[in-house]
Image (cartoon, rainbow, N blue to C red; front, side, top):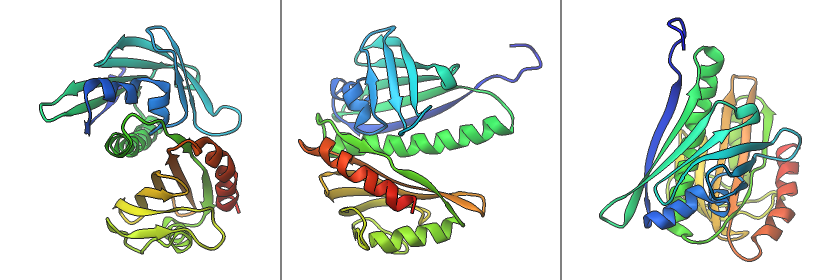
Length: 258
């Protein structure tokens, strides 16, 4: 780095989760664990091992990586490759006396400038959502492997209009509150559960009962006044989870892309 170059920036976040260091390590350092709260992922469980993360169908959506540190059950580092070359994702697990652990994420490799600022902000928000799902995974489904479906689409119009459409079809109250029930309608795929929390009225996390036990994150994220990113992300558990994902994900994509 020269004197004219600003230092690289990092996202640093932490969350307290239930479980022993070994249980938490399995959730943040192994393929089945990461796939239960993030995106479908494979990990060769050793230093130098290869990783893949699948963010959706189509070309360019499978992102390769590499394990550059492997120190179970306390520290693992994944280095980005391809489009994510230069990024590093360090996970630290520290036990607490009350049977829980603090998980720290250090996502390094960000530069400076408007484009970097936008990417930094987007990834910081995204990691906040995924860390919340890590909490839910370890609280409600410890030791179990979940299967993710991550349908996303871009709708014309502003965030408010998009959220009102989602809320109408999913039975979400205008200002969702913890404990309220939602149930899909109007020909949508089955989804039934209880709201756990919401953010600004445009995002809700849900503990699912149908189509299977699991978690869901439903969001309308504004892209200016002209477009909104809409997502219905589900993480399902049980022997039939893979089959239900294969059945329902095309239906959710069709609804989102209608």
